[in-house]
Image (cartoon, rainbow, N blue to C red; front, top):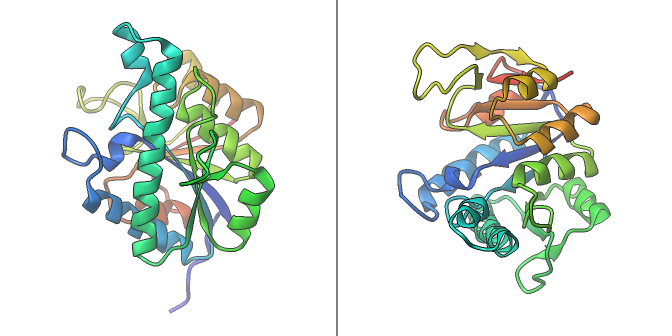
Length: 240
């Protein structure tokens, strides 16, 4: 049986912190982390270079804390540390299924992660290691969506794969409106004009300026990451 050729050589996978939570109300579900790791392993074994950015919303969300009176900068720093916890959990899950992984942090925590250095990150990818970028951009007021867009361009990824709980991008919330219409393709400008919550405005604008395609798909369907990488018609593509 002939092995299918991947459509992409280098991808950036954007995961929300909530993706690791599973059905729990908080924290990391090891079974969910294992499931994600196995899906990443499938793609990695196709020869695709994989890097990952993961949020921290399952542990702490700086914007929400700020809305309740906490200093925004303090809240965002705590959010960055939450992404570090998730990154280490995912690293553990990946290495348990036999995938060598490096965590690179935008803030200096040398005891648990390497500092982010662009050329070193690219070298890790070339050596067939999965690279997890932790701590966002290292700056407050910037989301992990923006960090994903920034890192994707820095390491010259071909696409950002945005994993969600629904099939793609809809004109309204499909979890609340069963008549919501899904887009197969949509432009960056349409996303901005319609106010669709794909990624935040800064991330979408950054991708638009640099023509970085975003593919939004359902992570809950096992094997979807592999299907996307093989070029199957899955989810919604955002491009010029």
